[in-house]
Image (cartoon, rainbow, N blue to C red; front, side, top):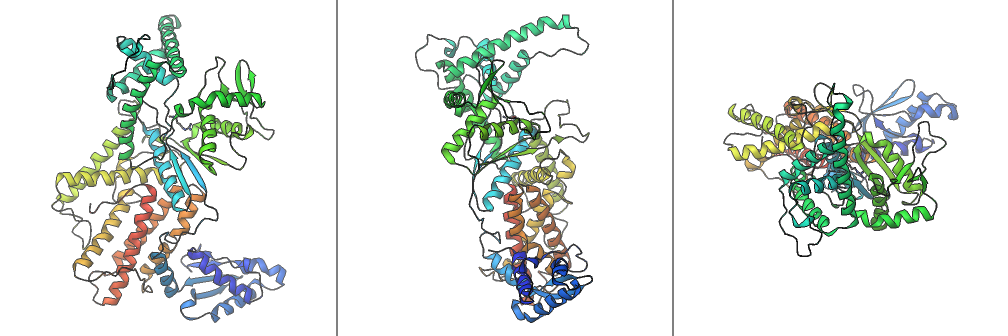
Length: 625
Ligand code: ARG
């Protein structure tokens, strides 16, 4: 289906042609002076020179043409020619109503089909096995999931790949530490030929403790004021431990049986835990691949890079030069193998791109990663293109996000100053939300309004379920309403507020609409299957209708710009328009049934658009709150 502005533009373009002007000039946009008009067209201005006429005269000719279109077909109810040559228009309520009725029966809610259906892989989440998820991983998951849903809604085929950090030194550290603690385990007995136990020799909480301990041992910190001499023995110890961990890593990668079996256990325990965490966030992945997935293709890739001359040795390491003449910043070469021949983060990312090309032939690969990795990805992208790991026309896109800060403007930390675990953060928001919902309930439901999500008779279990749903909206909206690249302040009080530009405010509005619709049905009135929008009869209804008409275009644009915040800005606008309509209109009390049905159908479409829009953002609305 065509976007609403497209349909009115076509009518304007016909008028330009009728008047003898090129139709390209007849583009209609939203008004930048909403106090004067709803829509505008500035096309006459640019034509003045070539037509040797005053723009005002041209605009008048167009207006005269438009006046010839009449009845239901006329897009505009008002066309004004304003000096020096602008056209200011209002939309005809009947025309708008017709568009909205069509939109209501369109699965895509007015979003146009893409010219070319692209295959897109989104690399997001990026958790590290055996390390607890922290707030940085929250952003990748939340933004990546939203981008995935938005791209799908825009009509593309989209695959989400979690790309776990499940290979390399971090796994070696865990194995090394386990070996120190439980050397008697069969995994460490090289002569063991039997079957390894099915049970993992650790739980997830042990695993999550083991990694930081091991990492701390390998990288001892020099205390403030501590002399180098005093620190030296600990440093030596740390280096020795790290050497052992590197040895473990190498053996794992070389395929030592016991280490591989242990690795399988680490993965099973860790992935089960990750799945729970991501499920809580309403985030899911098509591919659960990781750095380890491509291990076996590294030798072949490296050989080709060498044979075809793309990579060369530099100080013992194998590198691909990626600097370009036009660079204004220094662009270091992309390292493919370290001087000891070990692979690294870069190697697995390049091999992953090779695998993606072979298995999925994506048109676009989007990486949703901390923006501090932007130089790294620039190197990877250039290396991959230059060495034909990906095709020339594959669009590699880095969607870098900023830091989550506390109210002090510094990276979000626990009260004790440690890294904030994602599960603790979610716990905090859920707790705050539950308290609010219980307070609301004790105050007698939603302020005793005509229609709200009444919470009387809510039991604790249901209150918790609702709190969790609303909490998720608070977290996700709090994140997504900012431009991804910007840092933002994680402000629990603001995010959980029922007022203002927040997730809970949006949900509250949706619950309110659903409550009105339920009451309408309960009063015995029938709700026809098809939504038929009536011509709006108030400024507030018209405002709401105009916002609704833009949804499809907004969604497509949010994909084109990879900008979930545009969906947030839209739903906020929709919520405001909806609430203004609600407060100015007697809906359930309306005695004129036809009028009432018009209001109800407008609300039904609003509810539909809201439901789809928040689904794009990756959250849902509760039945009541
Ligand atoms: N595991 C990495 C981290 O925690 C993020 C992975 C990002 N994706 C990628 N293809 N490199 O920083």
